Image (cartoon, rainbow, N blue to C red; front, side, top):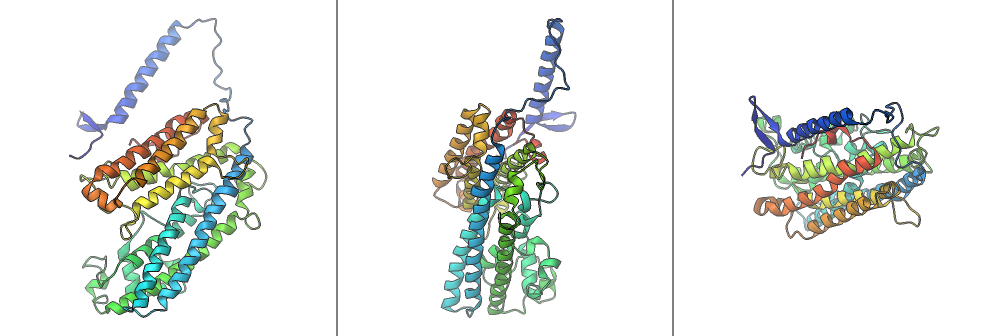
Length: 427
């Protein structure tokens, strides 16, 4: 049966049950406040609305925490991806040197697929820390949109990749300037590496099929172009990884210091609160992208008109969705802990300082519990959603215990505003 969050129809419209409950709650609270106002002692002083909201982390070593996150968590994660991207390039070069249909070609492709999985795992940890240059230029302080240049899911288009195979545009020097992000990056590379045969992902009406240009290609020609295309993408991934590391490196762009010195000259963050909020908002990748897009939509909970929507899973061609969710959780946990060095501080230390140690413990415990649920699965995400969706639903349910704490109790404990996309989420 299709899951539904809808309450009974009201005046011809269906009202989301959570919104209905919130409306009832607001009316109830308003009534209580009015009752209190009518019965309160007039001799008691009236609160001054102009007084600033108390800061629960005033006196906390915020610069030290930001330094720990930058030096011991974010930069090392980017460096891990940088190393994985370099291995991808080495493997892509080897694959491109082989003759299609040879044993060496097949062996090189298999090794390169493993290299892709390693790079994907490293980047999925980084996905949980999208602040600064990797973030969106429209919504992130210091954002340069580098994330989409490296990995653009869910903006993917296998047909576009096949079109570039057919016209060999990937060999043009201005390829990355004239193509959208769905034609390159880790997602396009996945399709090239894990697809095979002579089929393409385009409809019969697409020009490569209607004009016969794809049909004119032999399987060896298609495979040769796949390997050439992958080599071009791997070269660009190395360039982007190097760029991202350089932007954070203390000896280069030094975004490490820009984050750690929030509120000081040279930092794009106007104050420490803005930097804390940036870290908090980056952590919401676990809510909006992982819980909702990667799990709830394929499971048919939101944004799906069928019982399940397995086509909405991430990494369909490599069947690597579950591993990516796991890596996202690992990256999130690193932000909570703040590194392994003596005296390092993470986001959980903010909660402890604000006299909410139990909340910090609950967050970390729930993350570990969710990792355990994933590790206990004996099938991939695609196999699970087809034969045993309840097993994947268990991952979503466990993950929700983490994200619910984040967007309710953590936000209230630290007086932090939710990012807009999370504030509108009713799942």
